Image (tube, rainbow, N blue to C red; front, side):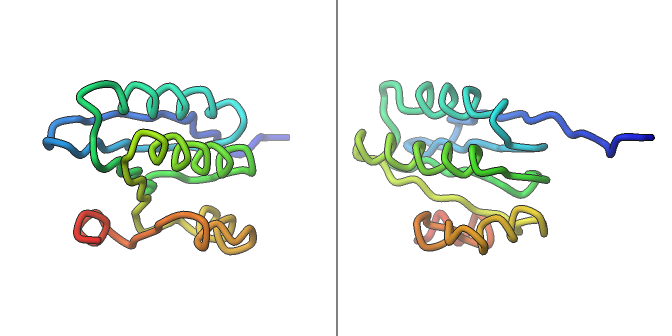
Length: 120
């Protein structure tokens, strides 16, 4: 029996645009990726603290409940540091379904593209 393809989770931080930090999440965000998200958010909020943290979910292929919880924690942590936390991307079907089933869209600021997220 063959296992389905597994896409390891990665998160890349980009602080290139002034007071905005962008986190690019890709692969499968489950319990094993939570520490990476927490660390990326923590590093992103180091001085000089940004006003906005964007999470690009375009290349995220799966998100489990622990992954969703890590996004909620990232939002909470950003707000503690007086920063906005917004997620964006054309969500892939498994990710969009997780957001719909759990009601995550009502708890996070979710935008369809980077331009929308920046303009909000």
